[in-house]
Image (cartoon, rainbow, N blue to C red; front, side, top):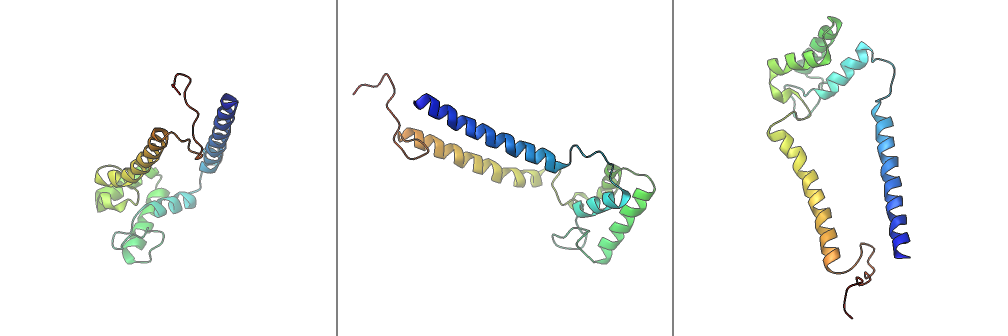
Length: 150
């Protein structure tokens, strides 16, 4: 009975994981057949670039003169046929690594990874403590193992 119950629990978790993965893949636009237009590419780039003179605003959100200049440069470079990577590289050369809203290495990557590792560590600690106390994660006492003496 316990084996069937644990198999059912794993089946539920596997089903949930499958649904989440499928939803993420569909939502990511991985299978979109149409290429983005220049306006869509410009909007995506503007949203991923940080305003050079603002605090924590993207180029798309800011109305400062420096953001308007970056937006104009992005549009001009796109019209000239440059790729997104070439445009980002040119802007990084001009404004430095700080022009990116998302980290691409160094200390900023560590600041994004540490919270995720901390959360994973907490989950592992809860599982270990629950097993040492002899209770399942549902709060019910676990049955003694077959080799345990009464």
